[in-house]
Length: 82
Image (cartoon, rainbow, N blue to C red; front, side, top):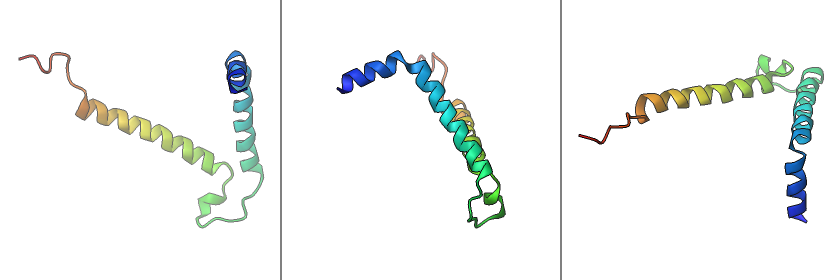
């Protein structure tokens, strides 16, 4: 049962990806159009703020972690050769 489902998902990955992008876009549009009704801060009432904030936060986490990796962790190939 599960094996057949996984095979179907692999065979139709392009279609599934398009469906998921459509669902994500629909959620952002609905977030912009439908007011939330709550908000402790003024910017929480802005439609699409949560999606924008989450995207920017993820990009920032990736950029900062890559910068820390290059600054502190990466060493040249011959680092242990003396």
